[in-house]
Image 1 (cartoon, helix red, strand yellow):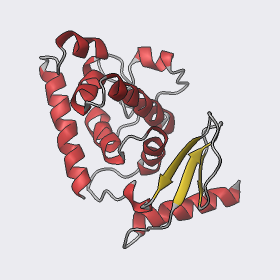
Image 2 (cartoon, one colour; image 1 turned 135 degrees about the vertical axis):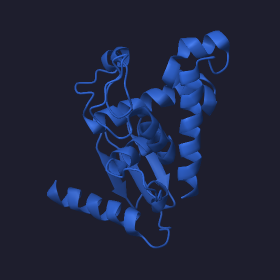
Image 3 (cartoon, rainbow, N blue to C red; image 1 turned 45 degrees about the horizontal axis):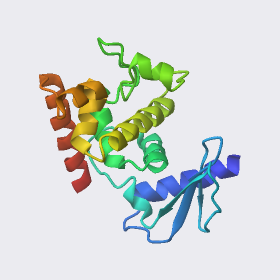
Image 4 (tube, helix red, strand yellow; image 1 turned 90 degrees about the vertical axis):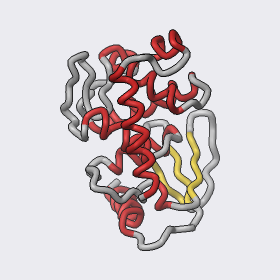
Length: 196
């Protein structure tokens, strides 16, 4: 176990500090217990194991910005697990909580990705203030919205903020100032991070 943690640390370190992109083919998968593994050989998949192939290891953690980088490892794991861009998750966290893992909104949303009480219950979150758990569930929930709205990023973000029922009601971004501003801010940060 100690050796595995050391190897993961070396890989993460290479992502952050590599002067040029790494082009080795690396395979990553998440086992049944939710542990992230890296290997240079393909692994046989079954229904319960998610396989990802990365051609450029630096892609997940290439963002260079003044934004908080404390949770980059957890964000990278969620990005790989749910195939959501690293920069998008990072932008959402910036707008949702400004990287405060103990944030609580007036509506009772909690943690880095501001998980609503109904989703805390639905997803069986034991501690919404735990950064790893919060980011994984927030990303999983966002991915479900992205699929629900047929890959429309704007509508998925609006649904994350205002709820999917509101987006379905208006069949567009709801006419709420908070939601419209939320979508605009996340998209601005997302595009900024993608350029880094």
